[in-house]
Length: 228
Length: 114
Image (cartoon, rainbow over all chains, first blue to last red; front, top):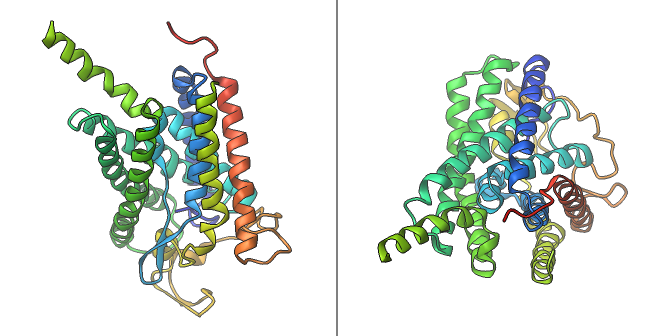
């Protein structure tokens, strides 16, 4: 879902570059509290894994494909702040090294996929893990639902940017509906990948799943309180 | 970093390298959701070039770094076959891991809480 150069005008692109830069700076500040000797290398792996899976376009409709964006997956595995930084790193490397996603559109792409995608994914995760059990299957279900919503929200980020700085006279409603429709399908594909990944990590090393670490303590404390 | 975490990271990296290096060669080459949306309203020929109509994608400009050695997920000089895509993918995984892992390691909390 990488925007190329020229699709959104220079002024809007510059504005979103500033917004993204400020947001990423905030993520570094907040993320430092999460980044310990264990999470730092894990976050490097999450970024590398997202890069790899982003190369795997899968067919969603005849002549239309999609790939994982990774915001929800990153939020589950390493938390929202570090997760957004992981996705942003992937986008920066893709842009500079692989010419994927325009250089002038980098701020737009970071805003949609790293900031919006991760934020939406994490909000769903934080809500759902209060209802679902903090088990491998609970985390996988959460990752699936969070991914679908995260991808659709990220796709609407493009619609917002296009509304502000689009360069053709096409109906915004049509663009919004087309983007939401196709990204619901892509989100389901992403959800399946994210759920499989989270379930695997949660079985092998549950302590490395940020969302489980964060929410696992609450039910345990509640049980102790009842026992006492 | 302890030994068990080291093994987990090595395993994870191996999976990422296999995905980017091997599975990537079998990925769909159809335009993605955004590109397909951007092409709505236009007609295209077999090579995906726009032949007429009005659509978002007509405004697309070339990438400033489109002439780079890895541009378009391939090694320049190796064509765009599976080998070229796979090697570029493996290189990407290594670069992303090194850059992000290195940066996260540098800004991490030095002293564990408690």
